[in-house]
Amino acid sequence: MKILVLNAGSSSQKSCLYEIGEFLPDSPIPPIWEGSIDWGTTQAKITIKVSGHIKTALLPSSNRFHALKNLILTVIQGEHSVVESLKEINRVGHRVVHGGRRYQQATLITPEVEAEIERLIPLAPNHNPCHLEGIAAIRQILEDVPQIAVFDTAFHAQIPQSIAAYPIPYKWYEQGIRRYGFHGISHQYCAKRAAHLLGCELDKLKIITCHLGNGASLAAIRNGISINTTMGFTPLEGLMMGTRCGSIDPSILIYLLKNQGLSTDELNHILNRESGLKGIFGKSGDMRDVLASWTAGDEQAVLALDMYIERLKSAIGAMTATLGGVDCLVFTAGIGENSAVVRQLTCNGLGFLGISVDHNLNEGVSSDIDIATPDSRVRIFVIHTQEDWEIAAECWWLTLHHGNSYN
Ligand code: ADP
Image (cartoon, helix red, strand yellow):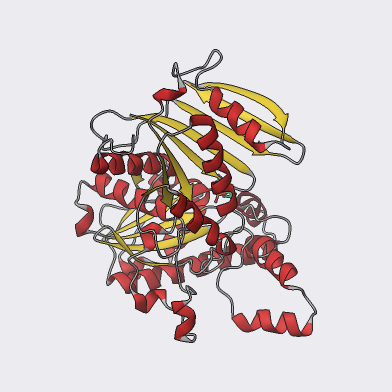
């Protein structure tokens, strides 16, 4: 089965084509084709990667459909084509950031599903419109190929109400103001991968996954189910992030609105784009820049990193309390996979939980290995997150359960 995966964001469109046989492999397989579009203000940069060969092209970014169509046509055209006809593509899987309360698993896209994704735009204004654009474009390019939505919120759908509800008037909860959680596809993949690497059944483990990218969140996973996570109603809650503040006293917002004359748009921009590491360090929200200045002893970089680690450790403590213990801690995404310093500083403070990292393994890490000392009560994994593979695998499972009734 050939499955095209689309992962659309406001500034980029990533895409992969997987070929999965009769059985789903235990470990991810590489895509047969990868493509991406970086949306510049005037030009869209298209990049394709096939068997190690990389090719780029520039197109006007004003016509997004045209750029996406050109990207997808490279699977059948040119020296790096991988299939003979677009009809060979059996399914298209879309990462959809917000599925609200209704969607708790991967779902075949129907007009009702599209309407719900549209209804949820106010909760995911930077993402859900891009997903709808991608779904409509695929309908034109690939006509009646079944399209499947894989929701970032779905993995957290079983979080108990006592954690999902905010202590505000209950009628707001009924109106949908509740914790949804995000990065679910990554948390789900990493939990499954950790269980596989441990050679254990997922449903016997208590796992904390730390997705530390520009956005960052933790998930507490018991028996393969997310029962707590740090992000909430929106991806702004929880950990300190690259440019997002994470959890702060809500009265700060009221104070700023009342006393400093900030508009809601300005406040939204500052809390999402000018806060977090960037807000404290000042020069950038990129962890690599913070770490370079931290090494040179820059005071703001030291403060930013101290705050980042402190909040991360507190959240790991909170997730451990929800789980009633922890068997396995996973670091993933840009910072989690690449920064030995962040992993070491985080684990240093958590010896009381039985977390002990092997310094040498941590420093020389390649992904998907256990970096805990032999006597650590908690296994510590660095796992390269593979959201696109997880989306393809979800599409494969959904098709298996529904047979070919979508054709
Ligand atoms: P996104 O959330 O946008 O998908 P990524 O998962 O790619 O982001 O993570 C981006 C973050 O990873 C950035 O803050 C970047 O600084 C950080 N990062 C990437 N490589 C390293 C590294 N070698 N050391 C520390 N941080 C890194």
